[in-house]
Length: 365
Image (tube, rainbow, N blue to C red; front, side):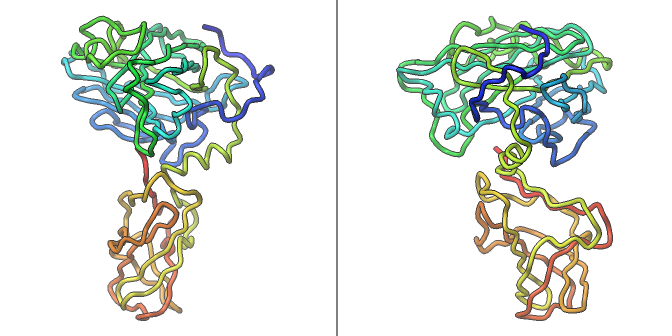
């Protein structure tokens, strides 16, 4: 464990970090969201999910410009806004990243020749806490957890997890589904804390052994938790945090979420082909090949219009088209208006006279 440091001796190796957006620099959804805790979701920094169950605790999640000097200007900040001192057995709060199996094949997990995995991260909190960080194999229900401590200063933790050779029967699936959960345990009930923490080697999942010994983030509304500089790499050595170009990080994040807007009033989103006087099919090329065909996150249709010839027609509905033309490189939407389109003509989908409209296309794990 070392204090935050600069990257003067950074290794020249590129692409060694298996974590996406470990610098917390990309936050397409929002910079800050309040009232989190009732349900799981992606709220602020891309690829970082809050997973939760059964707790009355609530928090605010923020992308905050308070990262350790020389590592990242940004971090995730969790601020407890509602405490939960009466912890039911099935409660938990996790900050996690889910990883595709095809991105993990270099670990060799589950067979002879499997490699160690080293995790490093920068963390601080409002007080001294003990929390846990877990690698959970979702393909084979195997896991291992290590504890770490926080102080009120930025501290870098370097944790090496042993190789999981198993009996040769638990490799990660080589596909685009989730295989590994990198999970920061911040709160849990007896279902997950009632046993003996599994720290020495990978083991088949026993719930009670996953988070034994951790403190509760929800113990007091004064509690804050900060995280950045998260890096997971192959081998027993934690190298300096990889300073990735922001364009590269954004491209990686857009594999899972693409967002258009909010921006200027009457901003053009895509070209459309009018199927009738009331429906147009809008074509939106995606900036990268997404993980799978994305879903349209709920939008406010009235914030969008179709521009047909000299008419600007307000949308009454905006949905993913049902004909199967969408794929992971092209999103096709059906935009509906009350009337006025030129049947067989073309139009343009644009935002209405506001600066708040946005479209989000989601292919997250």
